[in-house]
Length: 476
Image (cartoon, rainbow, N blue to C red; front, side, top):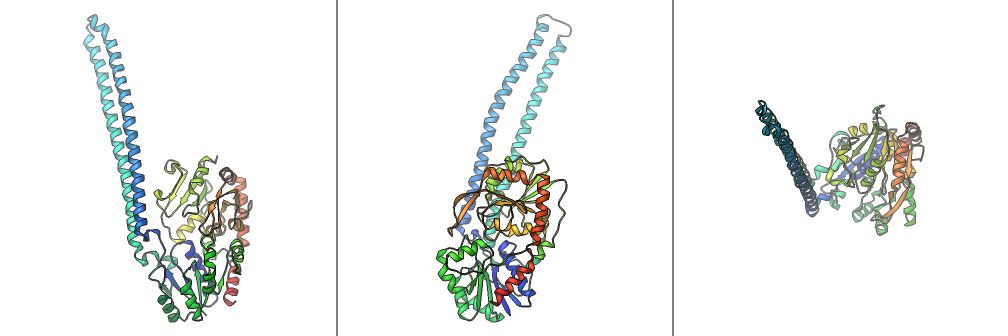
């Protein structure tokens, strides 16, 4: 059977799921074809890019103003203090010289010279100190200016490149595969769909997060079976009727989204996502002299400021290191005022690592620290289990469907924090409980137990079961 897969195709979670689905059907003996959609970035919009640049300019303007105020106020106090100190030194020297001036003595000239040399040395030191402070100020200003220019250049480059679909479709490393057709745009024209289906004689199309209901309904009318899934924070009641017309089957990867579909009148089969051998085969030694915590900090789902604040408050062992992994630059991350650069325990990793390099980094960690307001599938939870990494996350679905409290991780109490665009409840981790979870997970005895429990959890999530369930879904 010829199976088509429509998805973004780059180094991101959604595309990784699509690539592993392709791997399933290839392994079952089917021929697979990918229609790769360019990733949809916010900087596609000129207005959004202008907003990002303006925000960055204002942030750095405030940094310069704040630094200038520190220099002016601090410099004024320094000048006043040094003036009084100069008066004190001169008065002290005059007091020492006065007896010799009133009662001439053969060593008077020598004593006066010594005191004058002391004043001169102090003045030289004052001038040197001033030059050092001025040099530091210039270096600090140059550093801020360089960071500012780098951030602006990144936004401009991203906007320019986002006009080129090839920029957001990967063709290297694990993404370099046969039968991958590059779509011209994230929103694919009907003619492209039809041409792709006919040229490859595709019988079934699998989609991930595809809301082009009219185009998919047309493919379905041509006799093509359309199967897909959505993340529940975006799929809402307004999509139900159109989705039913466009899709033969909408499947679920979590119990929570399956239940939500049922409430909407959609019967959705649930498939169990497991630990793919490609991920479990990538290993790295966990250091014995430190406790590494990885924090996937990208996206609106992650309460970064609250998480970093909890890390700062927690009483942790001295050998703890937090790897803050994000594709965004530092100005795009809200750290809640916490000075990440000043904390030597925090390492900022915002390189776009390739698949193997990223998973080697992940596998070298002991704990995945991933509180979240909500999750779709939560691929990093499965990756943590695949690598034998304990997890700290919220005690809400779907996270608590994957992570077992006290066995493969620690679940944190949550408090309501508004709704997502689709209407599902969003949650924030309870601050004190987040601190408690960090302190508990980093205790050596607890950590060893969690790491062992994660290995047992991995054994209960075999990839072969996932393969069998997708086989049945294809044949349904």
